[in-house]
Image (cartoon, rainbow, N blue to C red; front, side, top):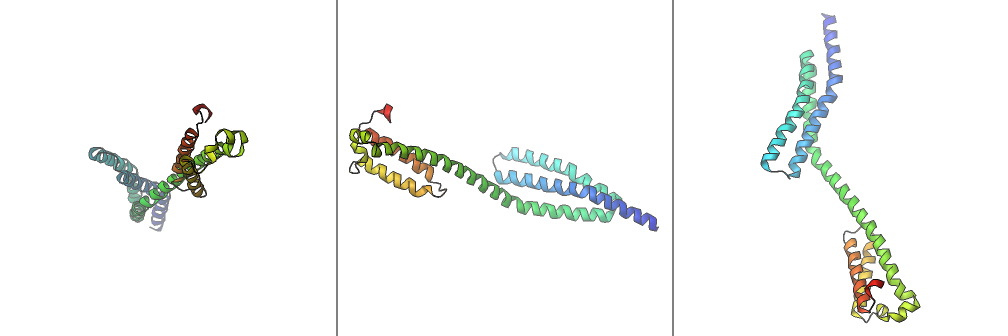
Length: 200
């Protein structure tokens, strides 16, 4: 009697060790996938229903055997695994929106940082281009309007330069647009000063 009890406990322990990770992973993954599709909401109702069926079917195909086999060997093991599966499902259901929101924010921050770096490079090119007219005596003589703030286009250029510079220090969402506006203002000032298009 004692030997049979010990053997049953040993089998239950092995079943728990082998099946618990499979059950927890399958339940967590299934809930995560279903929740992610529900939050995305990109598919039609028919496509969503069909995809939901297959997600649940595939998840159940893994989770049900991982629960039933240990239960047949030891009911207490099955009870423990059932509780673990329910807890995993609840945790995945509650945690998925937070995880997706955090991942989306991280992706947006990365895109913003990339756009900011590209805008910085363009900003530097535009400033170097404008400084030719300020520092090169020949350009200053040929195109004096580009350094004369009384000219409307040059005045707008200076304002655009200040605005872009004010947004440069931090990864501000408006910085790339400010740099684009600076480029347009510089081109307008060059045209107003009579600079040939091929020299701009």
